[in-house]
Image (tube, rainbow, N blue to C red; front, side, top):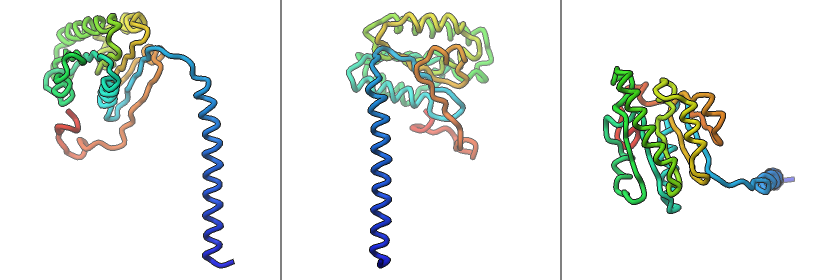
Length: 210
């Protein structure tokens, strides 16, 4: 057998093995899809030390808007500076209600009592959204930080989340998601830090970090 024919045979073998793998995978996936019958609002958590938690949350905001859903956004901790997400989403006041209700990083504020008061005000606004069945998705950006710092009672937050409208989705972001919150969530993703430009001296830049 010539080298050319041998290569053709090997190529055919590789293609056939790939086809069989994809056939088996399709059978598995079709079976899982066939068993998935449940609909209803989900709680989605993006946590971990890696970059991209809020970005993921705002991606779901845009996705929901694309499907004609109304969205409520509450930002805990953040609010000391305008972000690209806020500037953009405020162009759509009929579709998005955006509330940045923090005063900046906890190491900058250095006032726990004021941080608690701000977190409680933000949770109050969150409860308004959670009680409104016309809002399809609620983004609670950096709520995990407020809970981790014990600015809010986690059981009170869980009760509010569980009492929301049946078809309403909630996305919660921030580092250090508490185990109690993870237990009631439907989807939890942990962002892992592999590299970050900040550690190599890059300043936070528009369009990437804010």
